[in-house]
Length: 323
Ligand code: GZL
Image (cartoon, rainbow, N blue to C red; front, side, top):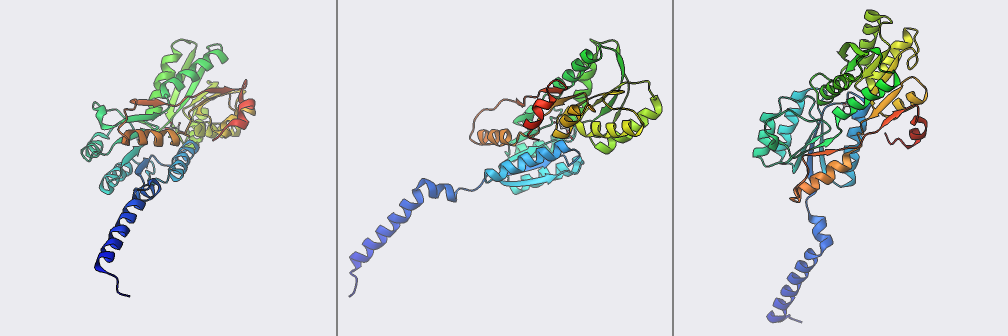
């Protein structure tokens, strides 16, 4: 039976209306919406802290269905700059950057600004006269961490003793601020003196090598180690034991990060104090990125909360440590 032209038109109109209706359903709209595209220029993989931080970012991105482009800078600023340029070329929605060092970022961040791509500084900050080059910083207060370490040491040692310092990556915000704040706080304890300070680059091998050199150079003329991170402190523990001394007893050790192995070392009495620097802020970073893209105002600095762990609370906290 032939279909009348009128009936044919009615069928087409009805089908078109149906397609429009289905496409307008919220679920459908969500399915067809493009996933968020985020580029992350990470420093490298220099420490256990960094591994935990990268994991936090990757797992959060996967959970949110983000099209996540992760770049491992392998400890070189030029690799990170190259990665940021490639994110700009790919037209990502947001750029996350954990700047290896504090300076040298303005040219590439100006390119991101010109491309109207918001930049979030994750973990480490930069030195710049133009803070419009990034939207916000998400991380810890490194200055406060160094102060906490120094004040703990002032109490634990009665304000007396010679200190050797294992610095983090030269020129990095955590190394600069942890060194400055520790030195500033030591002014309250004139009996505490830093007799030597060298970079172990936040690496366990670096911490061990520098500690071996300090032990050779200073013998027993120091009784305290201040390490800018756990990895270097673990290296120092190895060097001190290989020198036939007892870490945590013959030599007091204070460090920063508080990954589980360091908290375990506090329980075992090999490290005396560890100040937390929480790496698990992937959720905060992605929440902040969503707010920025939704046009919401966010603070210039979003700080994680860090606590101090020593023999008085390490055993209780160890089972609760998430990294
Ligand atoms: C601190 C972070 C530092 C850690 C180190 O937020 O930048 O870099 O303290 C890591 O362990 O290598």
